[in-house]
Amino acid sequence: MNQYRYLVKNIGVLTISNFATNILSFFLLPLYTSILSTEEYGIFDIYSTSISLLIPLFTLCTANAIVIYLLDNDSVKEEIVAIGVKYLCISFLLLMVVYTINITFNLLPVLNEYKVLFTLLYLSTSINQFFNNIARGFEKMVSISIASLISGGLTIGLNVIFLVWFEWGVKGYFWATILGLTFSNVFYFFCLKFWKYLGYVKCDKKMELEICKYGCGLLVNTISWWITLSSDRYVVLYMCGIGANGLISVANKIPTVIRTFQNLFENAWILSAAKNYNQKDENNFFINIYNYYSFFMIIITSVIIVLVRFFALVLFKGEFFEAWRLVPFYMMAALFNAGAGVLAGIFTAEKKIRVISATTVLGAGINIILNISLVVLWGVIGIAVATMIANGIVLVVRVLYVKKMMDFRISIFRDIEAYGLLLGQVFVQLMCDPERSYVLQVCMMGGILLLYRIEIKQAVLKMRR
Image (cartoon, rainbow, N blue to C red; front, side, top):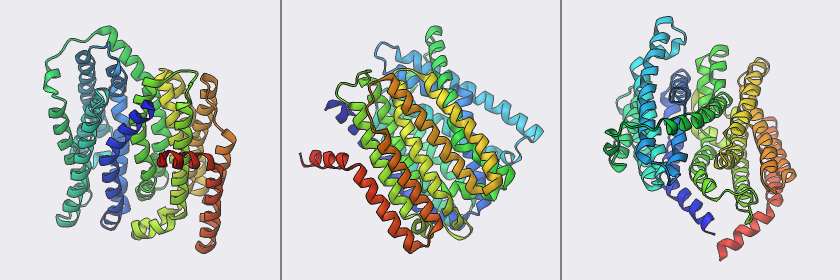
């Protein structure tokens, strides 16, 4: 039972701040879509998407790798942090070199429009991710929660000020994000007493090599996931224009509900998986977590798909409204990604990074091929379908591998039936009139609840106790 309490405690602490700020940001979407154009929204999205690739690439994912090593009680914490600082500084130098090349040869013109803002966004984001991973390694979940609350709350508040009062447009959107992250970084600096580590320059070369090796394994996985989840932005940018990229960005805001909980869960899950992993899984801890988590995510996805038109009417203003047709496919993609993330925690606990990397490389390759093929056939919707299929394939392959690796007795056929009903909802939502669509989808949702009746009954009994 302590295993479950440890996991639930960490999820609860993170939820207090992260979920609240993300939900508030979600409901402020009408403000953003009424003030910013699809082109402006597309510019910010392409900047943040590019940064999400450059940070792990330039740091070799060492910031993520040090979490596992900090959790090891036998490790020297100061040396591990010093290694992370070293590669963070190297990443700043690499950014300057690569950005200078881009400016000189105009390789990606859109990134040259706001040079200073791009640089500041990279610096604030990379430092924030670094501090976040240090705090995770020290198991300071409350500190992470407070830092996230500071960042999210300030970003939202400053967005209202900069967009509504000052009318700064997309520049205000940039500055709100940068300042929110910066104040969060200041909090982390004092909370972690980071000045104690700044004077520590000794790095164990063997330890550094291990962390870099582990990080490189994560890097392949990270880049592959980036390709699967974000490469569509660049395909759309070149084939459909920056405005279409804005539609994709807005369409991805509704699946944020799932992704937010997924991020909260995975931050806590990796700690529990590392502490409790065993191949036999005698007390069915991993099986139970997977089943309950899958059911929770599936039912949330089902509800959101039913209500997607309503959400679009409330949240998507003007030219953004057409983005609603993309949302069901991105919801399915987020669901598959969530399932794959649970299994990634098991691989991470066993330090089987190659398995994570191989499966994500497979998904990335499929995603690129489908992106280019389906955008020609179906336009922007083809991009969303490609992302859904690629994520689904990664989930299937990981499930099969985990079943070979450990005693992982889950009902695959039941999950397939549930996913089939969800895909039926997507089809009905897009093809039928609203009235008929709601009736059919509620029936399908009832079918999903019936499939997971055992988990529902067990959950109710535990709540009564």
